[in-house]
Amino acid sequence: MLRPASLILLVPSMLAGQSAGLDEGRLDPAWFGPAAVFQPSKALGLQWLKPGLVLHHRALRLKAWEPAAWLLGQRATKDQLLLERMQGILVPELAKGLQRGLKGALPVSLAEGDVLLIGRVVDAVGDVDDGSSFGSTSLSFDLRLMDGDTGELLGAFHDTLKGTNADILSLHYARWCEHLGRLLAPLATTSTNPVSATKPVLAPPPVPAFDLEGALRRIEGLRRDGLLGEEEYLLLRKKAVERGK
Image 1 (cartoon, rainbow, N blue to C red):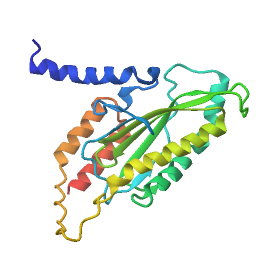
Image 2: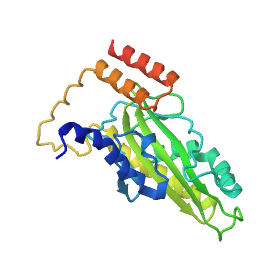
Image 3: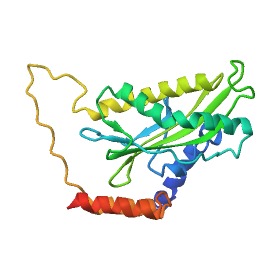
Image 4: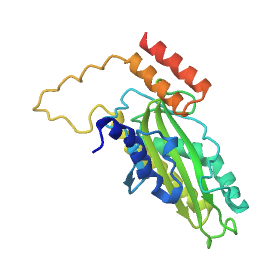
């Protein structure tokens, strides 16, 4: 029989094993960290959200995407050409789609915001005859939703989109981004259900005090796991200390 300590040590590897076989090797759980346990989503492929996540009074900042990871190995020229064509729309279309889906529930910016959305492409398959309507293309990507102050993972998303050509693929991506906005919109509102006029309106619960020690421990853990570079580590630690004052 395994002792409790042994079970604790096995949990990260068990979760990693659950995600490692998903999407034929295009999903690398290490990029997200051990907290993310992915579930299938009809609209978004594979997703995870921190239980009890609330985004009320927060703002979303879209960061530039990381370099492509090519998890299945470096691909042919046609695949790299598809990536080059798609790179110019990844962040702009993400911003537009989120705004359509959120409908004003959460501010979206490329420069400001305390919730970060960071993405990367992990695989791409281009058409031999680029622009043809008879080929087949696909784009696999990750998105990581993070607390800008603590670096804590708030959400994780992975999907592989397919289309007959790059233009159709772009339309699928724009629709995917809108679905993401719709998913996040209820988390940014105080209540998703109308309050009956016959019932008293309850005051919202008090906002808990910022746990500086806990935030610093999480940041140290991300650094220790190799998920934060030295510059990102120092910046997040500074922000956490300032927020804790």
